[in-house]
Length: 39
Image (cartoon, rainbow, N blue to C red; front, side, top):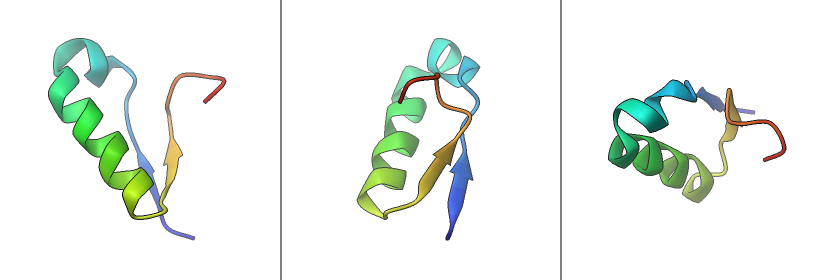
């Protein structure tokens, strides 16, 4: 399984990039690591 690590601090620094990465990961069925707990 492929995964992508996203630093939660990126949301504060560059929310557009954060949202893009999360959307990209979800659309490509990638596991996301490092997101806020509970997601």
